[in-house]
Image (cartoon, rainbow, N blue to C red; front, side, top):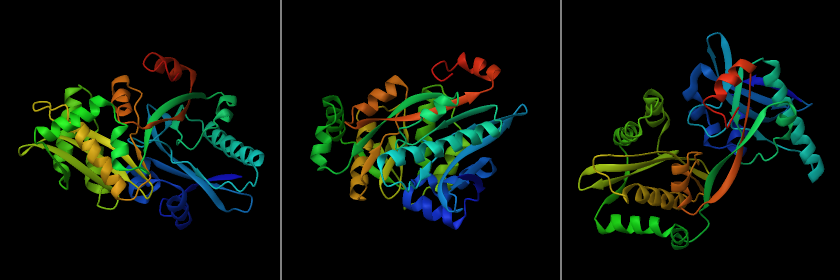
Length: 320
């Protein structure tokens, strides 16, 4: 098995990505990261491309970092497992992960902090290689249900807030002006007193987003936009990427109503899953949980030089 760097425009990679990957594996998404994006192909003994993953590489103070790219849920790991029985399939996947872990160790990154997709449930090799393996969680809602059945899975509080928004005559409409979406996203981060990479969010909204990969809904109080949801999607899954609301004109049903319409639109598109891109923040996790999705674990792996891990432990003790 061999790992080698790929160009994002490589034809064989794009065939692999379209068949087995997500929207985050697409050329359009990966090119947002420019020269920091590293795309790695996984080849078998016959030099056939059978898998891939990517990460963001950067240098700070002379130290090299390998990280999951911003606003991306994972490193987009995909693999075609040729094994015909369960035992051989497990063995093959462990060999792939051993090659990946060795790749990061041999490249002597000062810090590696990467996330794997929900589909990866065996990270034992990284534990053996002295990486820290940390479970994270998202919520996924099956869209193979009647809309009424989906709505009935929401908590009573969520259902009431959506009905209250309707009673108060809030308008929930699909939005084609991402300037409105951007403004509401920024207002949310201002309220939480947290920074946001506005330049990169703009790249997503104005360079990546189009009618074939994304959509947004906005709640209006009369003619004033007060909440939004921004979703990106592929052939199977819709991903909640951003939300926002106007702190001066809050309505507790505005955000949930945008989310509800986003779920309905994903179903209308013929998608299978609505992924809330779950957060490890308790208040955000609770909000996503109230929409009735199934909790799904995914794993992050971390390894750094000892002084860096000690420094990071002060801020991120749950990872280092």
